[in-house]
Length: 303
Image (cartoon, rainbow, N blue to C red; front, side, top):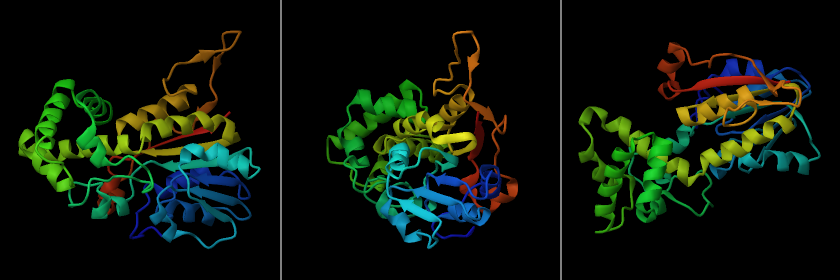
C-alpha cells in the first residue's frame, strides 16, 4: 500500500489516526489517487463506510474491492451534492490530500511537469474543456500576469517579463509542448533559480486549468454542513496559497480568516484545531518520498 507505484501517500498514519474517531463511522477521502489513504482508513474501521472521490479516470484503475468502499468519479467541490443524493447528511471525518499525484507528474502526455516532454495539457479531469495550451497561447497579459502573481507568487514585474517572453514566441508559432515552454523560459532565469521558477510557472498554469482554488473554496464552505459534531477534517497542502485558505477556514469558518460574532458579541468558531501548528513530514519520510517535503497537515474538529 505505502509503496504504490501510482502515488506514495503523504503523512499517512498521522492523518488517518486523527481522522478516525469511530470504528463504525462514515468517512470521506476527497482525493483518492492511488488509494493509499483510503486503504489506511479501511484498515482502521470495522463496520464503517468510506466514500472516495477522484475526477481523474486513471485513478479508477486503483479501485478497492471492499463492500465498505465506494469510489465516485467527481470533483470534490460537489461533495455535499453527492452525499445528499445518497441520503447522507453528515459524516464523521473528511480527508483531502491536495497534491498532484506522482502518476500525474510522471506521465509525460498529461503535461504536468517540465521534466518530461508532452503536450501542454495539465487537466486532472481529461474531459474538461480548458487546457494548459489554451492558457499559454490564448490568455492576454492581464490574465496571464494574474495567475502568475496569484498562484505562483511572482512579483508583478517578474510576471510581466514572463508574459512578454511567452507572447513574443507565441506570436511566431503556437507553444505546444512542455519542452517548448521550458525552452522559451530558460533564458529568463539564472541557472540556480531555474527549476524553482519553472515549478512556480507550471504550478500557476495547472491551478488555473483545474480551477483548484475555486474548487477548494467551494469545498471548505461545505465542511460545516457535512461534518457531524466532533467530526474531523484533515487537509494536506503543498503550497502557501491553499495552506492559507485551509488555515483561515479552520480558524474562522471562512477562507478570508475574518472572525465573526453573534448578536451577543461571542466569536463564532465552528472548528477547534486538532494541531495548532501544521504537521510536516519527518526527514525519514522526505528521504523516502522527496515530493512530501512541502506537505503540511492541518486538522480541525467540528464543534
